[in-house]
Image (cartoon, rainbow, N blue to C red):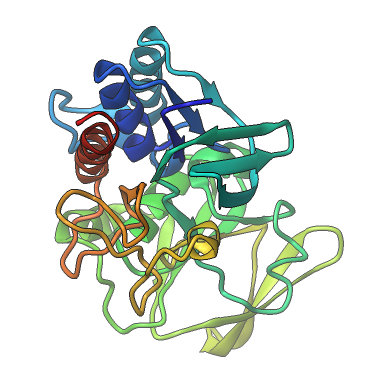
Length: 302
């Protein structure tokens, strides 16, 4: 039995664990990947206190702080979440846990292209994590789908390994920040293809080519060894909805200024929460995690 269970082990969930522990709440963090989307970045340069820090280094520093405060972190998948007898009951593949309060810090999942071949070749050339998989494409030809900052950063990261990188955007102009665009333009390995969509991924046992919706360089396909999809992320709120937690039209969880939801005892923090002009950054997620933990303390102890 815990005072609060925190679902999600990214910056919001880990920070919630730190602040809950400092309030002497018996807490549990459950997440499938410690660090969440932080681990998808190679280098972080916008977190206070560090001019530049490798993502895994920052994750480990935060994780160490959580563990030194005595908060257990369980790497388990949540299978079911329900409310009974004044407690939230959380079931994973390894057991059941319960608490009278809950903090949802689930984060976002990468958006899919939803085209033929994407699902079949995931892990066989289709990737959503350059930090995880870039090294497997040394001296190979890869493509990156997207036109924003994440796509630009991934293209530059892959250029350190691959022999050629196609950056494919459906728009005429890339939406990435000028600093990234300058680096893209200066990198001879990266070729930008604009106003083009990938409509199919083909291969035998692995990715071999991608099909385009228009002619490029006299053909409607590109021969590639890998495809990295960077078209944004979306919230995974299925668990929250089963509890009756309200979401907006874009499926983000609605929260108040104290990170509370419409369901008593349920708080939410991080990228999964609403905010029309929200800056989705590590710093913001961490601050919301701190607020959620403090609000949980007020509900349980005051």
